[in-house]
Length: 361
Image (tube, rainbow, N blue to C red; front, side):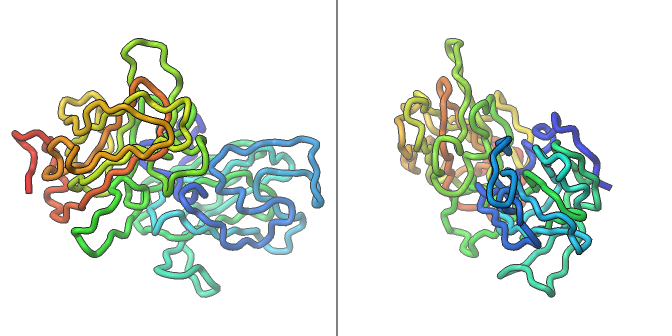
């Protein structure tokens, strides 16, 4: 049975162990829905919080930032089909936000999942129930956690509401199940969200979340990067830790500050570690090795650190990377290009990158 999570616990419950698999920022897409008379279903996967415009009317009635269907549904439910923003993922949590829907909110929901190798669902698609029927109240966030992540990975989900009404946002928390190139020598972005990269911790994310660092593309504006608050203490540094989607040999690191013009960091440092498959890695652990020494940053620039510039890591296995920004500021994307380690016995090693215990090839 799913357990309800207090909204104050959402970040600590899902923030270091998963992502929103259906977010439009990730590439999630609303494919089809039963009805969207009052408000479009695509609003469900907007990564931004819902907003309210009281007194604003459109041709169909009051303006709402969410998905709202017409009244008096003749069927048992309304539904929307969403394609995940990644190839597939396992699921361990759900959020249904009925913000500003009061008296027209969805009374109850279920969520179903399906995996489709190619194409999109059709009438013959078999759906698995992954969230049993849950009641929803007006204008509030409803969050549920499964007892354990789903055993199966899904490429599509169907959100059902009974019998009709409105939902502002839908979040599907889980872990990416990546599809890697068949060529083991292929250079890929090991930190990219589609590779299974995960930002597991940071010192601060006041203006922009750490998860944005691993998103596709270079983004549309300053709002979809990682940005910390202004520091006032001498010697301050902010940091973020990224767990790579697969252990690998690093060839190049790129720190992108596009759209950050008056608030980019003064400088950046990069550290690496072989910490196995664990999610919990301390920022001050002694086994971090500095692989990019302090380097000044510029506005609107991809700062590239190639294999020739990295300090001795091309032949060492890396599972986690820490980016330190000095003293604070904003970064749009962090890319860690490299080759995967195919020997899984090595990928679970907890040995550090230092010359005494690190694995070398």
